Length: 361
Image (cartoon, rainbow, N blue to C red; front, side):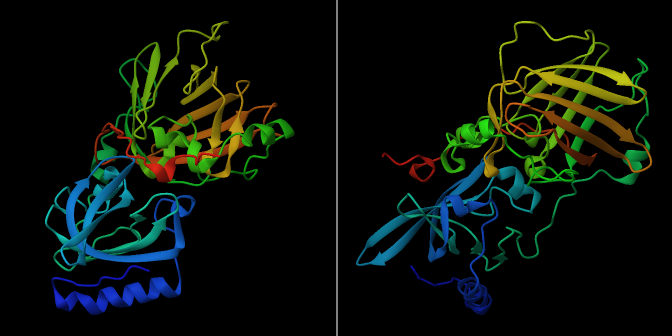
C-alpha cells in the first residue's frame, strides 16, 4: 500500500484516518462497479496536489502529483463517477482544482500503472467525501419536480394525445432495471455461445462512448430522459449516452429491409392512455453488460408507457422477446418521476486507458 498521509488541515486527520482504517479492515467495491478494473484488495492511500480534473461523462478523472522525496514526483490518475452523477451529489467543477492538496483511498488499477479508483477523499478544505461520493455538508440539488409543478401538468395535449412529454428521471439506477417479475433473463445455448465473445471488462459499449440498448440506457445512472410528442411520432432522447429514438405513429408495420441499429425501428399506437411501442431491427448487443447477457438480431421489444396522475409518475413496462438468445421473454418495469431539471446532453468523452483495453495474448 502506498501511504503518504499529509493533510493541510490537521483537524481533518482523525476523521480521515478513521475512515481509512475502516476501509483497510473491510474493502468495499467502488461506486461504479469497479472491481473489473480496480482491485479492492490492493488499496492505496495517496496524498498529493491536484494538477488536473477531467470533469466529464462517463467517468471523471483527477490527476494527482505525489512527492516522493529528493525532488522526485509521480503523477497518478484516479477515477470518479461521471460529471452528471457528481453534480447530483453536490459537486462542482471547483470541488477539485489545480493546486488543491487532497488525500484519496481506493483500489489500484489492475492493468494500468499509477491509476486507482477513488473510494474516499479528503478535500483541500478538510471535508470528507464518502464511498458514495457525497461531500460532507454539500448542498444536494433537487432531482424530482415539486408537487406544484406536477399538479400543473396537463393530462392531454392539444392534439388529444395523453401527455407523456417532458423530462423524466428514473427511480431505478442500475442492476436489471427494477422490478423484473420473472427474474434475470436466462440465456439459451446460443446466447451462452454469443456471450463467450463478450467480456464486460473490455467490451462494455460505454467504454467507447457507445449506447448499449434501449432497455438499460433508459434507467442507467438515473439520467434525465426527454419525451417529445407530435401527431405522427414520439421522440425520446436518453440522458445516458445521448441515444435518440423515433417512435412512428403513422404506420403499423416495420420496413422489410431494416438496417440494424442499437435503437432499432419503433412503431407505436395508443391503447386508451397507454403508448404501446414495438421495436425490431437491432444489432447484436449486450442486454445486461455486467452479467454478459446478450440479445440477437432476432430480438423484438414491446414497451408500454403510461402516466399516473395520482402518483405523478411515468411507468414503462417492457418485454424482450428473443427466442434465439433467451429461453423465455424477459420482463421488467421502470418508474420515473417528473424531473426538476431539464434534459442535458451526456456529452461522453472517452478517457479509457490501458486499464480498459484487452491485454495482448
